[in-house]
Image 1 (cartoon, rainbow, N blue to C red):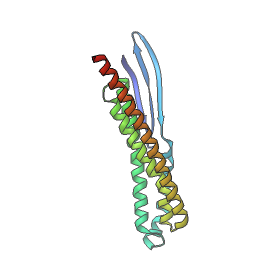
Image 2 (cartoon, rainbow, N blue to C red):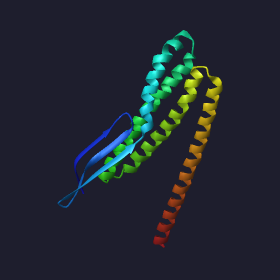
Image 3 (cartoon, one colour):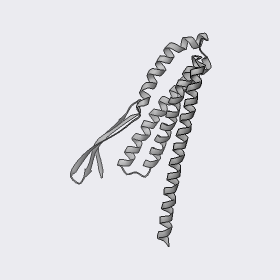
Image 4 (cartoon, rainbow, N blue to C red):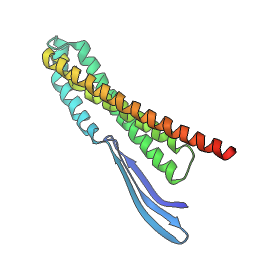
Length: 179
């Protein structure tokens, strides 16, 4: 398989689009692959809004400046986690198309960054509400964030079990082939 005329792009929205053609003999087969994480589209305007309206209030003490800084740090971290996720998916597609053995590593890294970015983006409403001293609503948002974190951990645990079961089946098959 020879890859030709390929171009890959990803943007701050963690959207990856890969287009190109695969040559099989003399025939070129066109393809397009797209992976999108669109939640990051809302992060940059959120940060801009929060900075524009919150910075003066944080400096003057109207809102908690420590939580303001933590919130902005979380927003910046989440933006870059989505970017790292998009880069990981892009590298995964490149490695897969070229049949490189490290494609799985890129996919695992991209999935990890996506998971951590989702945890960060769902924590941001609670942090913003705490910074603006709306503690009752912030407490509700924090509890809902904890619930989503527990659900995510249960889901990941289920994936680990199925991966472990598949690995055990593969080992049994190999052992049977040896005997």
